[in-house]
Image (cartoon, rainbow, N blue to C red; front, side):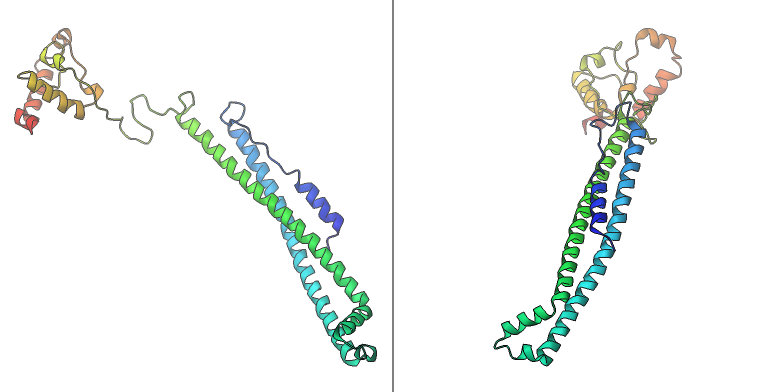
Length: 259
């Protein structure tokens, strides 16, 4: 049996189960330690409320069983009085008979009233516990959201320990660097001193614009860096320029660019 004082004590205890979440969990003074603390505290509160819910729910079931037993007992005794008691049978109408039966079963009716009031108190206590448990579940969801915010901040913040892009310009997970389109100047293609080494020499300005359109869509920034005349003189002219020129003539033609 759970007394009314015990139910009141349970309500007073769970009423202080509150968790204050910080506005910005990514600040240095919070982070992982803060998340561990609020997660543990929220789980402890939820377990405690669930424990009280189970106890009160079990007691509610017991009260409902006792209440039903009292109702059946009064109904059975009232039927007996209506059939065997001479005073009840002499009453002129059914209302007077029911009133006399209730008077004769006063003790049983008072016990039934007390049991109903006790059940009502238990039901209201259970409602409060369910509301508190739902509130803690909502807080737990908010903590998970803050955990995800901290995780994203550690993964994408340039000031964090985990960089977004590696030194070789590769994305985390082994993917290659982003392929981006670049803008090539037509005038730089017409000038042999500024033309990128991987782009063939254009025949005329029209051809140069076609080369700009093609290589601007299919090449990365690091592929079209121009090479000056001094750099070309320092390189092995028998290997690098000839090989690049041969590959360009094999893979691309003027008719291919016009298609």
